[in-house]
Amino acid sequence: MNLTEWAKAQGVHPQTARRWFREGTLPVPAMRVGPRTILVNIEAHQGVDVTGGVGLYARVSSHDQKADLERQAARLVEWAAKAGHRVVRVESEIASGMTGARVKVRRLLADPAVTTVVVEHKDRLGRMNVELVEAALAAQGRRLVVLDEGEGEGEDDLVRDMTEVLTSFCTRLYGRRSARNRAQKALEAAAK
Image 1 (cartoon, rainbow, N blue to C red):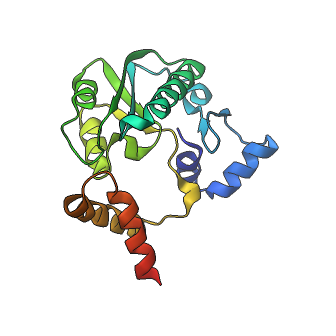
Image 2: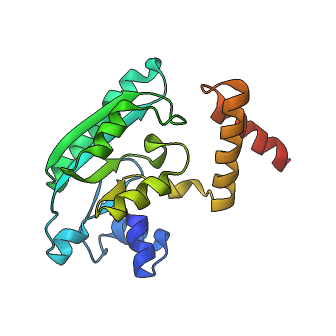
């Protein structure tokens, strides 16, 4: 579980939890798995075994990011190895996050052996409506784990929702490659 998720569930401010981690006073076992990602091992703390298999998914948008894709997949595999999870499937692909026609993510989600889907960032699974995928997994007794929620960016729900809507519109108008950048520029212009 991400440190921010754990903090919110415990009624502690995420910054306080980060400070506890830095000071070594966090009351549960935790480890750093990325520059901004700290994972709390509540299963080890509570003595609960993780059942089923873990499916890891990495994605980038274009072929010139292939090296990033390999590093992303390696970080996911390293996280799973450190946490002691049984990995049953690793999928990585080069595809747009705006389209649902991604063969490898469909294969991962359809695999009944995968009880936990792990992605590094939520937008790696999809640019919009990831919550719907998460709800569908939960209905089947499965779950989605996002290693880096990006809580340090200071984005609130309204700004994130507006960015998603603008990204969708810009994708249709200008093409998929630069849609997110154009949406961000539109938000900055609107703020001025």
